[in-house]
Every structure is written in structure tokens, then in C-alpha cells.
Length: 251
Image (cartoon, rainbow, N blue to C red; front, side, top):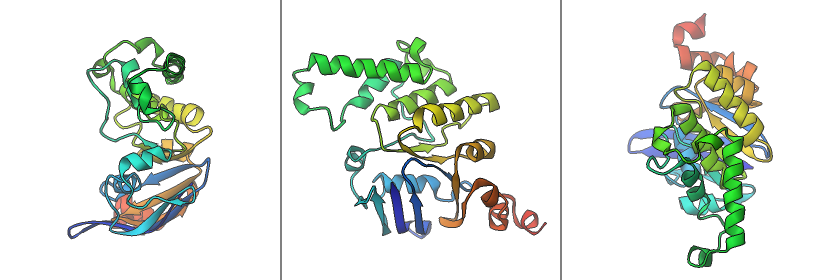
């Protein structure tokens, strides 16, 4: 579903990604971990066209998408959430998800001027279905800015799912949550978001990422230092050193 080849991104003298090559299979939940500043979100930004690649290439489902504009990448079936929430605080929960549907390839431009009542009814029904699936149905008319953090993260997930992506990129979906809230988010990803699509998840909570993902890739200073099954990756000496320092790595 997603392949990068020797992908690099530099910001002046800072090498945020360095010759990163990886493959994510269709239907996989793939974890991306690493210390702060290791290049994880930069990878998402390069894949989605927010930043151009300095070198290397990106393929989505066999089609090269290197350096396409964000709107072009989205139209090819990619959606994402953000570490720092991107929701419309002064719109209702329903309106947030409704707005996320606009720009879909199935939405014809003439519908923005002359609405198709049948198509609009279908889209409204889909919004209600997504709110039900993400546990937000009873908050549909609340302003998004008034939601507690866990519900705001659920809303951002619902907004991403409204685009019916083939590839879903989740950037710290459980950030700021308690252990119980984190478990609920992991279940939501596994049971609602992942079926029928490919997911990449950035997360610092190792219990969550280990339970959710079949494979992990670890970045440090923009380079891949380990890849494989969670148990093997999390016990890898280079990974322990990256997270815990030289003493833990030597112990």
C-alpha cells in the first residue's frame, strides 16, 4: 500500500529523514516509533505532500506520489490525524464530520451549487453512522471546542474516516489520554478504523502500539534503526539505547 525508497528530508543543516526505505502491506496496522524529534511526523508530512522530499521516492498502491500536493494525495485515498488536534472548535461535532466529506472524489462540483437531495441524505446518514461508531452520537450538536480531549481525538478520527481512506495515518491518537482512555482508543482503531484499510500509527505508548501493530519501524535522528515484530524490535539493543541511553543499552 505504501512504499518509500531512500526518502530524505532536510531543513537547512538538519537531516529530519535520511534515506528511509520501508513498505507497508495492504490491510496492515503498522507502527512508527522513536524518540521525540526522530522524524516520525516528518515522514507523515512528506508522504502527504506537506513537505517536499529532499531526495527519494514515495509510492501509494503502486502509483508514485512523490511531491504531489496535499490535495492530490488526499484524492488518492490518504487521510490523517494530527498530534496537535485539527478540528473546527466553533462548529458542532456533526458539522465537523460533515465538512470533512467535502472534497471527496465522489462529490461533484455542481452539488455545491445545486445540492442533490438524495446524495445529501446519504452523506448525512454516513456522518451519523461515523458518530455512532466513534461513540459521539449523543454529542452531535455540541460545539467541538467544548468536548473533553478524548472525545476531540475521537472526533478527529471520525473526520479522517469520513474521507473513506485506503491509507489512514494516525499521529499520536492517544496523546494526553489516561490508560483506560488509551485502551478505548486502541479498541476503536482496531475495530472501527482498521478493518478494510491500511493504518500507520505513530505513538509513544508502547503497550498500545505493541498490542495494536503487527510490525514496528523505529526511527532515530531520521534513520531506521530497527523494523519487525514488536517483541523483537522493543528488545533490540539500538532501540533500547535510543530510548534509554548508553547505560541501558550496555546493561
